[in-house]
Length: 191
Image (cartoon, rainbow, N blue to C red; front, side):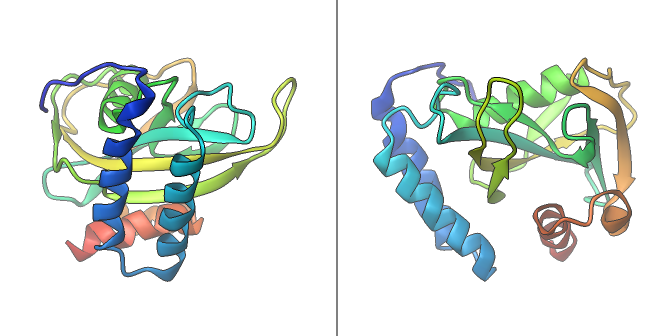
């Protein structure tokens, strides 16, 4: 993957908006179209959109990790949310969301032989995170990138996970039937 620029310069929101605008032109799913529009409006309205401290919501970056044949994906059984999900996490001020996705893929799996499939977004999702402890209910505006990995490489289960598993994409509904996950499965299988 290309070198990444780590930054907290809010002027880089233009790069995020450019990624989202290009993606908007390629989306055919009506629900995702609405979420992309909501994410664009959020980034335009919130100079600190990548800051976790922004109570109304913030950007997150996810890695939809697939094998070279696009038949399997690596999922984590998320400890706090108690469900199977793609790997990803908070931007923590970073506006290079591809870098966020890459970092989360490495940190949450221990994999080192990763390859970006594209510099463009694979999927965009907006989902409500329930309130817990000192954190109010808030939105995650999730920018997702497809990353390829070798399923023969050993992975490491992080403290954030109960488990990691390579699953057949055709079996996604058995692991997580939510539309957010099923949409990524359909996109992958459609090629």
